[in-house]
Length: 278
Image 1 (cartoon, rainbow, N blue to C red):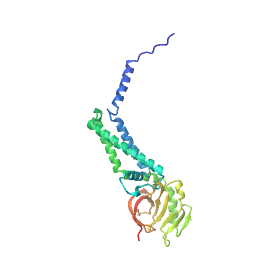
Image 2 (cartoon, one colour):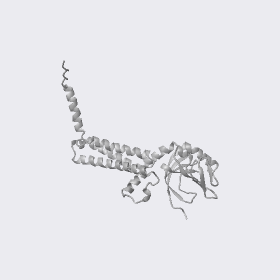
Image 3 (cartoon, rainbow, N blue to C red):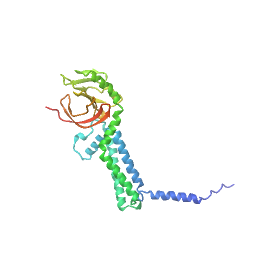
Image 4 (tube, rainbow, N blue to C red):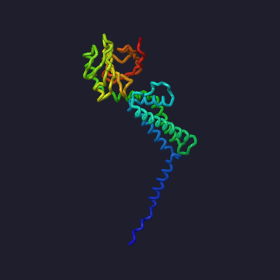
């Protein structure tokens, strides 16, 4: 008994297969820029997410500029972080930048001398939209960095509130050791306004850590953040008070560069620290 002979493909099957092959041919990179569009958009979204998520993205960018010789500022090197992690992030960032440049070059050349799929009105509109998105990302880089900082730190403010309340009620008058701070040194000796922490405070287990605390004449409490969030200050200010330039307890001037309100008297601030006054 012979096995039944398979029936030949129907006309509908042949048409479907032919249509699939036609679409695959049309979507070939040489004929249509869809894959290039998706690559460029994926790189754009990845970089935007990285800027918001990673507290050290600016340091990574500075390190990349230093490695490429675009800056000779040694301070651009992120020496305090894990070396392998820094190098890995620099490579990833360099790859993102390279892919974005290559994809834009391909789209630009395609519109000038590419196949018909590259030179349609729809293609030009997509390229224009991607270009606008990239320009928006570049021009709003700093805003996105601050948005990321706010989102990360805002969830940990509740852990700082008991520390602020304790310091407001009983600001140390000399070197000491407190449960919420650990051991610290107080400066200046006659009327301390700055507490320099000698160990990592317990709050670091659940949120951002800090290396020093400043008290202003108006009663504001400033935490100099360290770790991944180093470079900014988390501050609590009483009503009708806000971040401003100040001279710390070690007589070093801090010039306010940027501040953003987190609500309920809390602020994130960044200062340019000048040399110690003589």
